[in-house]
Length: 615
Image (cartoon, rainbow, N blue to C red):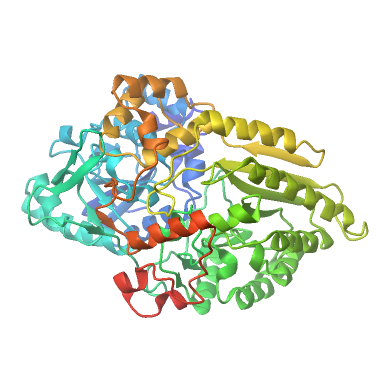
């Protein structure tokens, strides 16, 4: 796209900085010197995508290779989409403003099932046929990874290549094969066959699915004997050795997270039974203290950010959290660079650390008890008590905090209204704890936000067989809590039950949902995760037209014997372990943190061996 055309376009949209590119640390390369052009596509708007750590890692990793140019693609906001369609212009990359159909790969990160229609919209805006069968030799390969790729089947008609697991190594292996294939000028199918044996690669076109008369899956069948029967995820064994960027792009406009991020470890040893991330990212692997210090120093130096976040699934579980935060506060506190510790656990609330951090910049506190009663917290294996919450709250109020967010989930397996009463009980005990704190110590004006999300059964969790609560039941529970939580110091937020229903359909969906996904998008569905755009009635019409019962996917309990759409994927954690955890949940039995001793999930034997879980 030439400069004049782009400038004319940018004058007509609300936030042109979403599409300009050329931010600080954005990569600029000569197209004459690159062999492979990769478009990293985030299926949401710029402000959301630019806050995603995985995008920054893979963007810089690919661009660290001289012969690869990775450019960014985001969902355009509705004003830009309207202009593009009106002028019959293709969606373009931010780096060179190239039409995305001219790239070699368009790679999507699948963070959330409700972004799927945005993937279709991006392809259509890029003049790329949505169905893979309609993409001839000239179109780019469509590749996808991220947590939702662990059930790739709803996107099997659209995506050519799925990457299962961590992408740093496998992506480069795929591109190496691509260069060789490109030089030989072979058919596209040959390239897909060439890479299907790379660990972590799934090519849906190489497999068929058969079904029973009751619509459950009968079998997953490879079209040729030589194709792998099982697809294993990829993991990075040593985080100190793997690539991590020492600089990231600094946007011109405000984005969701305005901060530098250092990933301190991957995986989680806690074993919450609803949590997909806690299972699929196993085993835990820590980055060394020295490496984290080094990366933090470089990121602060190269970005100028005034906040550093230590990213992980459970930050306070990092074995060196105290010396690390001490170092960062000593090094950067005087420069007014704040430290952010997301994902803190109530039972490991590092009071002395938080007290130091708040001297630089005080923020609100967020905790996730998840359930209102000890019984239900034991069912989900949360591993915290009411005392943990109250001790943390009393300490926080005594240090002057007055803004607290508490996250819960409703619709969990075995939940009763007594468990909902427990949420209200806990929130009011937190209020009491504030007023029992001496006035001279506590901050002025208490604000407690209670948020409830709706349980969505996810693949590869001990709760993957459970039905989701119906929309009607979830709404009754939300209305019940609205009444119970009426209090001047408490604000209650909750997620829309209808969007959670759609999320559950696609989270546990199979290949037959591809047609409904395309039909839903054709009817105008996009930005389904955004309340202003979500159109429930259109989705219900779509499922009816496609002869699909959405409750079959979301609200049906499944047996251990049923073949699940993701059963051909090996994540290292065994199905036997997941079943055992589900049975323990029914009895309210806890499973201890596997840092204490091995709980036999299968990961340490399947992937690395030895004591990797006991870091």
